[in-house]
Image (cartoon, rainbow, N blue to C red):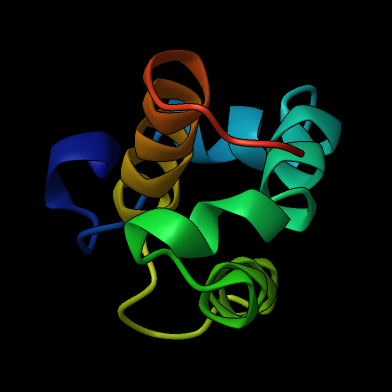
Length: 84
């Protein structure tokens, strides 16, 4: 009875925990090495700012947003000549 009668509680998706945990150094390395990405319109400052806002738990900066940019950066690095 105490479980279904209690107030709603939030939870953290495992993806967010992973980005802040064991994937953090991998994400940071990619976000900090985006020098060559300006040629395809990706700003190093914007990447760095997004990552800092995520780490500071800024409202509206979700794990999905950080992950989407990371995946895009990986794709660009693999498929377009980018010097890192």
